[in-house]
Length: 448
Ligand SMILES: Cc1cc2nc3c(=O)[nH]c(=O)nc-3n(C[C@H](O)[C@H](O)[C@H](O)COP(=O)(O)OP(=O)(O)OC[C@H]3O[C@@H](n4cnc5c(N)ncnc54)[C@H](O)[C@@H]3O)c2cc1C
Ligand SMILES: NC(=O)c1ccc[n+]([C@@H]2O[C@H](COP(=O)([O-])OP(=O)(O)OC[C@H]3O[C@@H](n4cnc5c(N)ncnc54)[C@H](O)[C@@H]3O)[C@@H](O)[C@H]2O)c1
Image 1 (cartoon, rainbow, N blue to C red):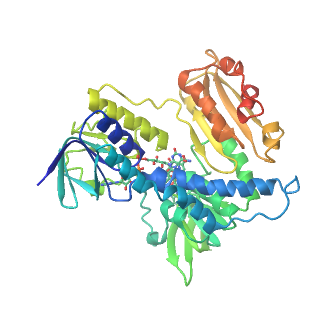
Image 2 (cartoon, rainbow, N blue to C red; image 1 turned 180 degrees about the horizontal axis):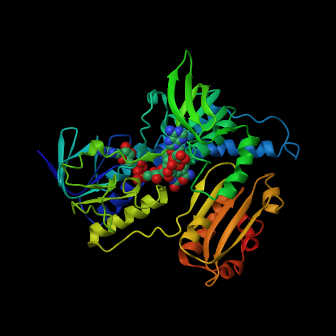
Image 3 (tube, rainbow, N blue to C red; image 1 turned 120 degrees about the vertical axis):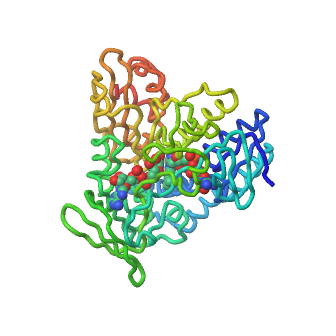
C-alpha cells in the first residue's frame, strides 16, 4: 500500500533539511529519505569533519611557526586523537538529525528513492506518493574511467582513516586536494598532488594561488601539474599510480590514493525517466524557480540542482527558494550574487565576486589594488610568511566588484567583502567603516 504526503524530500543534507523543516513548519506533511546516515555531505563527509581536522593541524602549525618566538618544544599530531575529537562532533549528527525531523512531524525513511511515476517514488519496497517531490540528492565523486579506479578512497574514506599513511597521492588539484594535502602534510605524511590542469585551484585568483604555492613547497607537498592519472595498480602493501604529463609518463608508489578530481550528481539510480524529469546537457532541466521544466511536481536544490556553485551556503539558499515556492506558488528565484568561497589551506585562500578575467569579459572598467602583505601586523602577529590581497573596484560607481584574500584571517575577512559585493557597497563606504583593531578586518581600509 502506498503512503501519501504533501512533499517527499530525497536526501538529508542541508538542502533537504532546509526544505523539509520549512515546509513541515507550515503544516504540510513531509517525508524524508536517505540511503546513508542522516546529515549529508557537509556535516558528515565534507565541511565540518574537514574543519575539525584543520583545527588540529592549524594548532600544530601555529605552534611550529611560533617556535623560537616564545613557544618551545616539538609539537606532534596524534592522528587517532584528532580523529576521535572529530568523531565527538560528527558521530552524533545522524541520530540528532533524525530526532529533529521526527519531533517536527516529518516521516523518516532509510533507503534509496527511485521514481516509479511522476508523483511517486519507491524506497525499499515502500511506495510513497506526493504532490511534490524535491531532489536534494547532492553530488558524488566523478567516475574517472581508469583502470584501478576501485583503489581510490574518496573524501569520506580520507576523513575517516584510522591511521595516517606515510605516502599519500591526491588525484586532482581543486578544493579537496588543496585542503587534504595541507592536513596530511602538517600531520607528517609525504604528499603528492597530480593535477591535470595547469595550476591548482583554478577558481581562485592566479596570483594569490601562486603565492600560496610557496607554502606548499615549505610544507613539502609535491605538485605535478599538467599531469593526468591513467592507472592505479595494487602492489604488495600499497599502490602504483601511473600518470601522463608534458614530461612523459610518471610512476609513483603510494600507501593511499585519494579521489580529489571533482564531484557531480549521480542521477542514474533515481530513474528520472520514469518520473518524467528531463536532463539538459547532463544537468537537471530546471526553470528559474528550481522546478523541473518537464515535471512541475519536481523541484531540486543544492549540489544536485547545479544552478549555483556547489557550496553549503548555496544549498541552504536553494532550499529556502524551493520551500517558498512550494508554500506560496512559484515566485522566489535564487540570487547567487557574491557567493564567497574559501579553500581552507593554512593560511586560507578566499574569494568573492569577480576576478579580473571575469570583469574584463563583462566589459567593466575597474581599478585593481593588489599587494603581498607579509610585513603587515596581522600577518606578523601570526608568525605567518604568506599573505596578500587583490581588490577590484568599478571605476564609475566605486563599487567593490571582487575581493581575493590570502592570509591568516582571509576566511573571516572575506565575509565583510561579501556584504559589500552582495549589497553594492562602495570602496569609500568600506573605507569609512570603523573596524575593531587589531583584527583581520582592520586591514580592509588599507586594501582599498
Ligand atoms: C570534502 C568536502 C569538503 C567540503 N567543504 C566545504 C566547505 O568548507 N564549505 C562549503 O561551503 N562547502 C563545502 N563542501 C561542499 C558541500 O559539502 C556541499 O555543497 C553540500 O554539502 C551539498 O549539500 P546538499 O544538501 O546539496 O547535498 P548532500 O549534503 O550531499 O546530501 C545529499 C544526500 O542525498 C542522499 N541521496 C542521494 N541520492 C539519494 C537517493 N536516490 N535516495 C535517497 N538518498 C539519496 C545522499 O546519501 C546524501 O546524503 C565540501 C564538500 C566536500 C566533498
Ligand atoms: N572549501 C570548500 O568550499 C570545499 C572544499 C572541498 C570541496 N568542495 C566542493 O566539492 C567539490 C569537489 O571538490 P574537488 O576538489 O574534488 O573538485 P574540484 O572541481 O575543485 O577540482 C577537481 C580537480 O581535479 C582535476 N582532475 C580531474 N580529473 C583528473 C585526473 N584524472 N587526473 C588529474 N587531475 C584531475 C581537475 O582539473 C580539477 O582541477 C568542489 O567543486 C567544491 O564545490 C568545497
